[in-house]
Image (cartoon, rainbow, N blue to C red; front, top):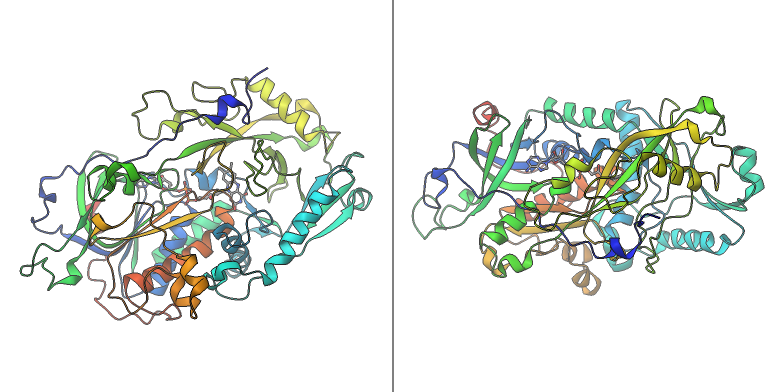
Length: 543
Ligand SMILES: Cc1cc2nc3c(=O)[nH]c(=O)nc-3n(C[C@H](O)[C@H](O)[C@H](O)COP(=O)(O)OP(=O)(O)OC[C@H]3O[C@@H](n4cnc5c(N)ncnc54)[C@H](O)[C@@H]3O)c2cc1C
């Protein structure tokens, strides 16, 4: 018997603290000349979230320069192309969480965006299936979702535009479900029917976001280039180029390295870090280099949970006519936290070509004792294979057996020999296997006085919002009248439903940049006045 994800072997996995190499270029001294390349917005990471942010910033701030840098040859090579491509309804997360709010908002933005730009998608609907004991559990989900219509707890709904509305949801009997999906097994007594769930072609979505950004006058994208260092540009005195008299020169020095090893630097007024599995690396590098008063003690830890997929050949039978996504109840991995599931269970998804896939399972990765290699998780990405890092040491056949056992509990006519290994993705987790629920995390820092800031400094202050008469102003840390701040926005723990939420995350980030970075009101639409985008076009020098 192999240890499972909820076993004690998995529970004590230590965190990894991703970081960046130290800044290396000689010209990076605080008093040296500024780099030739200077941009208004630098977005780090070309997954779906970085692309959505790049597009949103270019659209909202056409007078500003927006650059995106991605370390691979093309966008979406990591988590954004290794997921289930499901447009989630938003059923499972705490009412006040970013996950709930941004999933609800993001889902509707996603359907509209797909329609507007002809991106292949389908509102398939989803069945969550349970046995005769599961009615109360399913009813709990229905009650939770109903409460979302009114319960805008902590005013977090003010983050996103429009009235918050839970998705349509109902419980039907197993017999009624079998009239729609005849392959569902007789043990299934109760089914949650989530009609607003769907699927999207994530590659087309990313290609469209990329094209729209590049078509704008103000955005540029650089591939094959990694961000390898960051430091704040702080005031050096009362006179001189970077003195307090020249606030516009404040920002961040960012060091990049091309695939060929060429190191360069640029100055960015605002940096948005959407680097997925490397999310905390920039802040951790700043903490390591002593910019925060709390030093390395404040560094942010990450855990990595691999999800394996298997394809299923329809020709083998058992799911001949399936139309909807079919999920078991979420995998709680032993967590007592009702929102603390580790994955949504080994479910059935159908892609837009009708291909069937099962997964993802939950396979926590353990770093080796003296892990120094960056991105160590990358070498363990082969689907359904054991490795030195996987807690589950079962081989491919045994894992397929386990998947078969799991899915035949609700689709009994699936054939074992129809399953074969497909791909794997890694969830960027901010809590380990014993940790319970963890929300999307958006942090905001300013380049000035980092010494007085905390590493884990949230961008939104819910407590102030509750007490404030004007929740909309209090929600964003600091008020809009404050002088604009050279900002670093960090997105961490953007696991599922991150694809669904991507356009809403971009909306929130562009509001945050508008408000804290440029000093505009939340509802201002592209009204920012400022320097022209004189640096657009200089990217060739940098890449
Ligand atoms: C198994 C699995 C199933 C999922 N299923 C769903 C689903 O059905 N629906 C849903 O809504 N969500 C789902 N998700 C979540 C969703 O896939 C992610 O939330 C989303 O893709 C995250 O996008 P991202 O842009 O933040 O990260 P990523 O796609 O990881 O992009 C980050 C990018 O940053 C780049 N990068 C990193 N470091 C640097 C650096 N130093 N310099 C330059 N570039 C850098 C990387 O190369 C990468 O391209 C799933 C996730 C997993 C793992």
